[in-house]
Length: 333
Ligand SMILES: C[S@@+](CC[C@H](N)C(=O)[O-])C[C@H]1O[C@@H](n2cnc3c(N)ncnc32)[C@H](O)[C@@H]1O
Image (tube, rainbow, N blue to C red):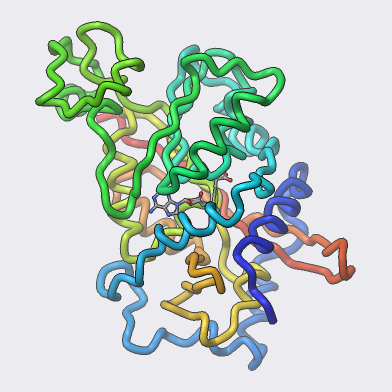
């Protein structure tokens, strides 16, 4: 069985688009019972040899971000771009957000999520990071040429490996974080705030940072990051979120058909797999997501499986897709 990162991502996008207007075709508990009773799937269930099943002790896999950079170099056509229009239905607060809302899209890829958000309102600003320069350039190109979106000063892609680096100070500097999001009227001090020249464009005179994010979107990004690094990645995101701000989350769910297609040798951890192109994919249970967000001090507003029946147009095979949908809030105090 071939598990191609690219093909799988492309198919996933198609089916997500199809899942636009419904999210509960079957009960996740029924799928769980079926999978757990089937000996052919038993290797997916066993503890990973030598690895813990919690997010603290397993060794770091070889650079997954390098595999993503290579993935984007080899798929430079932008063919994996598919506007995620359904997101605005899943997360209506993006549509109803206050004027001038600031949104950070983590792991933006070719801009599939960013473009829908930018389209939703002319007053939102989207900051978007990825570990691949190629995909950021592609995202900029796609978004700049998308009809109906004026991105002047509204789309700010920046290069960052969230598994290794911390978010830049110009997003939400320490002084403003500790003053509960009220931008401190500090004088611009590039040496102190490590503001690079290209970032000054976002900032008004005498402004030390953009003042934090109202929303952070993590759409099929956390699963692409090694499990060990997830707690620090979420912690990082929380640090640049304003008090009361939301993390909007969608990702692969436990027993999704793409998980069951992975072969035993592709397991690199408990519920964690490596594709043939070296990119990683983790499959979340609700309990795992709950533990990760609670540890990061977030309040759970919504958390559920989306279970969709879809049909592969090429071979007519039925596929049971499982995604996790979540909405989490940073406490106001
Ligand atoms: C499945 S894609 C999701 C793209 C986008 N969020 C969307 O809605 O289509 C995962 C993205 O995460 C990025 N990524 C993976 N590891 C990363 C890391 N350590 N730091 C930043 N981005 C990363 C990849 O380059 C890729 O673009």
